[in-house]
Image 1: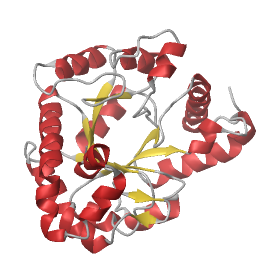
Image 2: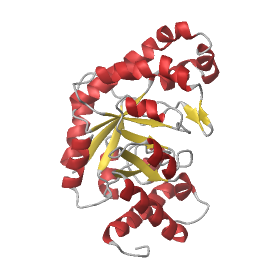
Image 3: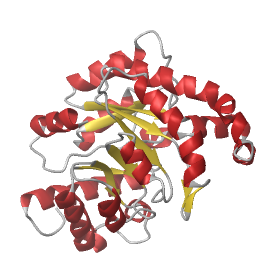
Image 4: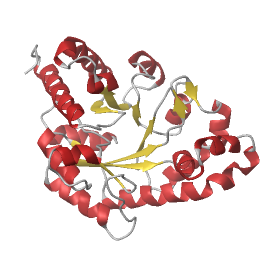
Length: 295
């Protein structure tokens, strides 16, 4: 991701680039766009974003792994001046969607069976990652919600034996040296060093569960943070302009400590949140320009 991040900085004059991972179909409908992934390009251009994100399993529309659909989206986004990321659901998240959360957690009581249990979902994730890489995506993001606000759903030892080898296989299925980022909801402090050691260099994590001080302790210098936008800024109750000073201070601190691509971990689910996002982008631009106040 280092080369892609440097390319991003070269293709924009903005010191704090930005882009959202997930936009709900209702948001697109409310602003007069078709609820399809191609509409994310128009929205990204309208927001003056720097990167947009697609997915083979997006609720907006599913895309076939074969046939070139993702490559065409990437090309259209590039033509609009946007870099492209692709989010890929991880093996745990796919298994939960298919079998239910409690059933999958029960699997961890039978560790000898875990490789077989996750074999199919790991194959699906690998196919999407390799296809996205062939399509020319600038950032690949493995998304596996493996934690809640108090910690992972399983012990670090269970994670290391059951899921980390699958992540390694997923990364090894890609062209040599192709970096992959990681997203999870919840507090992943206990397993973050394992992910770093495995070679993940971009992280999208919930700021409510993973505050900046913990990130600074656990993430090595140069690791890219794809985040920084708190859910409360998007959802209220307070207005963005009422929190402007605190928001600017928070984002400025993140951008000074490590490479930052401004994004949320919760996504945008309403037109009101989209308007709040625009205001947050304005504040980020003011940080770069050294200007106080909300434009």
